[in-house]
Amino acid sequence: MSGHDITASSTTLFRQQPKVSKVHFSSGQFVRWLLLFLGGIAMIMPIIYMLSTSFKFPFEVYNLNLIPEEPTLENYTYVLEDGRFYGWLITSLIIATVTTISNVFFDSLVGYALCKFRFPGRLIVFIAILSTLMIPTEMLVLPWYLMSKNFGWLDTHWGIMFPGLMTAFGTFLMKQFFETVPDDFLEAARIDGLNELQIWWTVAMPLVKPALAALAIFVFLGNWTAFIWPLIVTNSQEMYTLPVGLSTFSVEAQVEWELIMTGAAISTIPTLIVFLVFQRYIIRGVVMAGLKG
Amino acid sequence: MRFYRSLTIAQKQIVWAWIFLAVPTVFYIWIRFYPTANAFVLSFQHWNLLSDREWAGLDNYVRLWNDPVFWVVFKNTFIYLALGTPISLALSFVVAYHLDKVRFMHGFIRALYFLPFMTSAVAMAWVWRWFYQPVPIGLINNALSSIGIPQIAFLNSTTNALPAVLAPAIWAGLGFQIIIFMAGLRAIPQTYYEAARIDGVSAWTTLTEITLPLLKPTIVFLVVFSSIGFLRIFDQVFNMTTNDPGGPLNSTKPLVLLIYDTAFNGFNMGYAAAQTVVLFVVLLVVSLLQLYIMRDRDRVS
Image (cartoon, rainbow over all chains, first blue to last red; front, top):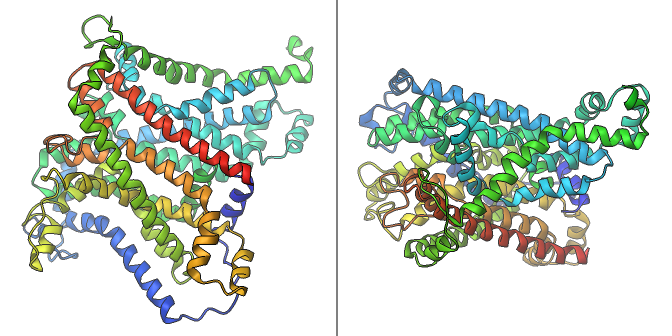
């Protein structure tokens, strides 16, 4: 995408469109609005039914009504008393948090170096990192598994998170955003006697905060929902992440759908809360990451 | 320190650049490039994790070529792509096009469409799996039977299972595509539309002659992005068909699930590696097609 399109789109996304004429709510407009609204409600129905069923007793599960006749917290008590969900929640939190911090730090470190320093080999490093975007994770899981086996990383937190500590996507995103930081700012800091690491951290980083937020959201969500690699690298139930744990739990529960829905709700509610709180930030981040990354 | 001071500014930059890049260079070589090379090498070897790695020449690829399951899986993977990409793009464009013209409760409606993107594929696979169950368990069949329509076999049918597994994948991705489409729509200068209005151009012609052509970069990006996603589908299939992963009768099995099976149930590492090389080539071709189409665009602008 050309640079012009991007800045135009990401800045105008939330601005009121210039009104050409006073819009009156015509009947055509109303039908359009109504259809969109109903479509939107249909979109969240799976989530609504998941939440509603998690508060139902078994005898009500096969009922179509949305609001349980006798709401109960029994499913949550049962699932949480099992104890395993706490462990899976904590593992997922650790993995997602550490990979997010690591990506925000290292991706911007590399992005900054590639953007602001002139040194021999710069283009080679850039192309090399970019080329890793072409290699699907699914191709690397076999060698990563062998590596983890050799180094004893199987079934450890480190084993789950090491492949995602840095990403080419994040590096490229940050490099693009550091282009918007004027060199004069950096030069001024240099004259003030800051070294390059200090300039990066105290001058450049605060100027790209929106990009850092976008990157953090993507990395966190990606690692929170990641499935195939955690499934491969973990063996014992204590080390499972939430998606892997939920998958195992659901296979065990098989016909007890109200318990499965409760497990699914437990792994979904945290991201739903994050979304409701940071909605604007997240949508803006998606646009930035989608168009620039 | 004295040595550092004796350097020119340009030399200092080189030193700093490599201080910044030192750890990441090790990471990329160790965790990305070496494993990539290893996957290619492994695809020319026999290995069951216990014995020594043995050279196999092209054995794995020959076996793949002659494996009927592989061709079924290859076909499935492309059906996911061929159904998933057009359907999700058409739906998300229609929503984005109309939502762009709506002011009342705009943010709220946008949030409704976007919410599924925030969910985990595993959790939602189980929710949809429940929807698909036969009477009296599944929601969809219950609703159908209550209005007198005979029930439909979803996950147990070799013809219906694949679309049934695909549906939650399309559903979860719509929000992202709608947001990107709306950003693309906003980037089109209003003056074009005003000129069209003054000339009395119909809404349909405005859409086909102005909006869609100017949206081409957005469309190309989304086609490639969602194609890659559908070619790599795994989470939904694995969780919706746990009693017979990829079933019934391999009718939903995608390439990534075949790779997982070969490597971690069959312990046939070399053969699995050859399958990952196929996945790599398929994704590479899709990405190169994007570059080819985008090059066309750059020449115009």
